[in-house]
Image (cartoon, rainbow, N blue to C red; front, side, top):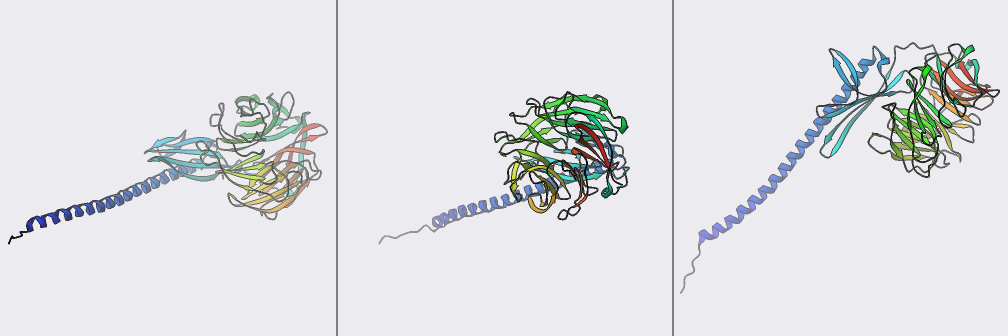
Length: 473
């Protein structure tokens, strides 16, 4: 009988090879998982470390500019800067800087009044294929300023009025306490700087004949921004560094042929509203960092309705529109230099009219509701949450509203017979009250002077444009 022999060693060796392969595979998988977890942990720690460093650099910006503003608030001029040190003293140098692999800049812009600056500290860095940013915002106040003691506006009077032109005025802005800048809708010289140091003998310091019809005026330090119906130069920059020699130094031609409306400014960014432009470009964003070379950088292309007025509040743009179902439209304009604006929400005011003018303050929007004579008060618990809380029954046509935060007052210029010049107390937005209404002349524009606690106005008296000043008692 044949004997069957088994090679125990070979069988055992075969099983051992399989087991070894399985063990190696399992170990490799486990090692890969552990390695991935370790790599993720290392990357997460690195990201956290970069974020901490970025926050430190952003905070250093804020602390430095706060230190600079303490002894001399006037040194805080609008623009983009980076900080430097000389000995133990902080300083500012124009433009951004690269530090430790981060890009850091400090943007100084006008605050809600002449004695406040908005300071934005931004630090960005590249993380793989992404650019990350840390942004901090702080408001600085000129607490050492000489401030007039607030008078009793309930007893306000018109201090003086002087005829200055036969043309119809559009708006007025105070240039210090000596000069007034006025734009007219027509006339040979439609941009005029008046010296009113002697109200009885007001003189023309300088004037310009700007193209077409002028629409809105904004003063940014020693520069004026003007919108015009001129198709080739809807936006203009005028240098007022020397009030006796105003000079047009820059223009922007907006796409299309529809007229611009009103202006809002934040730092070096100017938002310009426009009439309905065929569904595109109803709001333009202009970079005015270089005053003599303003640049169109972004446009809102999907509004499809007229932007009657615009207001920039931080990272948000509020638009008063010509529709009766979405009178207020909100866009996110964060990083507008590099990112297109993003629509966020609409708000439909009660009733069936359109919104034509905006003012902002005390966490609220003040909206003139055309055709009704009403000013609606809309609170903003968040940037995109609206609550319509009150209606101020004012009159027929409102030409301008100016909110003053230090007083919590809303000053109004209008054609209303008994309230052509009006002051409202809006300290409690849900319960606004009329402080005073004056039967003046039609008032087309006004500007509050915080140092003097007075209001400069431009009106129409007997067919003549009149420069006027209102004061409390």
